[in-house]
Image (tube, rainbow, N blue to C red; front, side, top):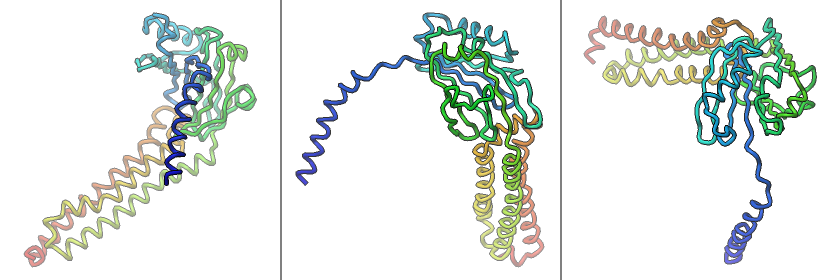
Length: 306
């Protein structure tokens, strides 16, 4: 016991002595500009996260206007805004005509790096992240991402992230990035079938549980005074099915894939329609069951008296 305690004390003493040395020895990393390209269908946008010290006393509105002017030379900027955070300022620009082609699961777009990051110094450190549906497969300039310096894609909910770290000049040397993407149709169809299957599951659950609630009250009418409590208790499983349906929409990649595959309006119908239908099944079954119970108890005065 004493030996273990002594070893623990020595460990903390060594760690305390080594920590300042490692802190001094490690180079101070320069704050990098972060640029996010969000390829998500109908609401494609760019997000610039610029450290406050890199503004060099330039007003945030002027910085927004400068970036917007550069982007507007190649795309139609639909709207733009900025918000201040503790260490940086985030500028968001919604691009209306980002895609050159978006049809039958085939996707094409081009991004001139001079237009995207040419407003920064050539030696400025930059982190470029490209986020797209994980149900899509992308190539840049007909090459694999790794050959252009991008890290392997990371999966985050419904999106995949391709990350590039380097200097602005390294991106400018590549000039224009031509993105060729394709939606994995088989996987998307399978995921869509599973997503719509939640409606069938909800239908079965509502029917079974509402029948059980009715049978319980009819056989034990003395529990009618707890009907509200029982009603809510029997609706827990259908509510969990709705929550599971929403989580599956996000985690499967359908949330962004629908926006890439379908036109605006239709994608929203596929996203929200099944969830709304599952929610509507709850009152349809349980309100109807409540009316049936009231009618049967009214028609059977003996049960009502019990």
